[in-house]
Structures are given as structure tokens and as C-alpha cells.
Length: 179
Image 1 (cartoon, helix red, strand yellow):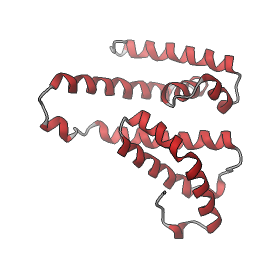
Image 2 (cartoon, helix red, strand yellow; image 1 turned 90 degrees about the horizontal axis):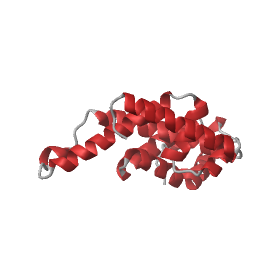
Image 3 (cartoon, one colour; image 1 turned 180 degrees about the horizontal axis):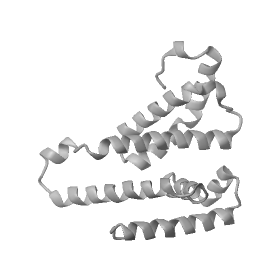
């Protein structure tokens, strides 16, 4: 269960937060883990997200599931990206001590760099393209699920995803990343 100082929230908001946590924490964890590729960091991202959410609990409508889900996933995504930023300059201890197969380490580092750069590109895109691409490519939703979340037609979402992928590929190629 989510750890949070109980004296900060009113009883009503604590109950609402517990309901939101029980219903959405698993999905939030999955989203964070897809970004971070690390379970412990994903747990930290969810914890940080719920801390932020708790501060705004009295302003959140938990009955509008589509809006709530979008909000929660946005908050956890931002927390995960913040963890990536903090991690960017840190060199993991195992990379410093285990140099037995440096080619794997180089490959993993390159994959992480491309992923982080791609996420940066996605985050700079116009919302029209960013939201559908992020929900499908990073969060793992289908285009049908994405269309329901964004309240857009499925055909529109598919076109927006296609255009966003082309923009992303073009910018990655211009930056010198092989696709």
C-alpha cells in the first residue's frame, strides 16, 4: 500500500486516494517500468506520483475514469522521466565494476540513449501527436483504447500515430541515430 503521512489528508481524501491507488497503481507501475526498465525505479515513480496526487486530491474527480486515468498516467510518466533525468549522468555501479563484456554494456547504453532522446522528442511534439504516440508506443495501449482515453475516433488516432512516428523517425535520423 501507498505510504503517505496520514495527517496531511482529511479522512474523505484518504479513502479516495486509497481507492485510486488500489484501482490504478498497477497500471501506473507498468507505465513507469516501460519508461525506466527497472522495477525499483518504477516503484519510486509511482510513490512520487501518488505524493503529488495526494496534494491535489481534493480537486480530483475520481468518477470521470478516462480523465482520471489520463491524469494519473501523465503524472507517473513525468515522475519516471524525472528519474531518467537524474539517472542520466550517473554511471551504475555494475558498469563500473563488471567490465567482462563491454560490448553488451555499450549496446545497452546506446539503447537507453536512443530511448531517452526519443522520449524527449515525443514530449516536444504537439499534443495532437504526442498523446496518441505516447499512449501506444510507451504505455502499450492499443489504438482502440487510446481513442477511448483521448475521446477521438480510432481512425483519427491511427493517422495521428502514423504521422507522429514519421516525425519521430525523421528527428532521430537527423540526430544521427540508426533506425
